[in-house]
Image (spheres, rainbow, N blue to C red):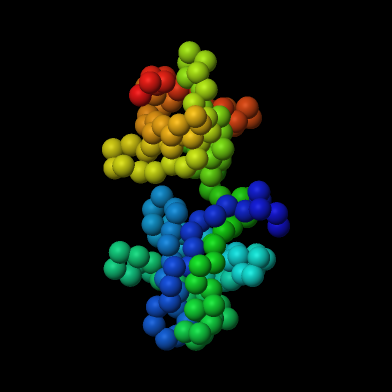
Length: 168
């Protein structure tokens, strides 16, 4: 599968115990949402390889998982740092006005006055609302508030229209 067909959900962050369990860093909105996808595709030595998730659970402030065929700590250590992804077609359908962050990255951000801010570099949560990091001639942090700040999103045109002061 090509990279555009893959959606990154997280990565293997470490090992847990001696029976091959791995620590998981999740990018999913609900931290344990990553456990609902099966199999995972891990980027091992530059290639995507499928791994069936046998078990997974919240462990403290993180997640741990057991993968089929990984039974020792040494096998788990070989996976540390590997990206976890799924094919795009496994994603849950979204309601109107909802977007996957991965689809917003790289989109042009333009004000209602026609000022180009640059492209969406990343997004992050603040607790009250999400924030877009937009990189152009400088970095801007634009709150993701539909209706007030975010006026429209066109996935086809790869453009986000915002009502935001260019000097801010």
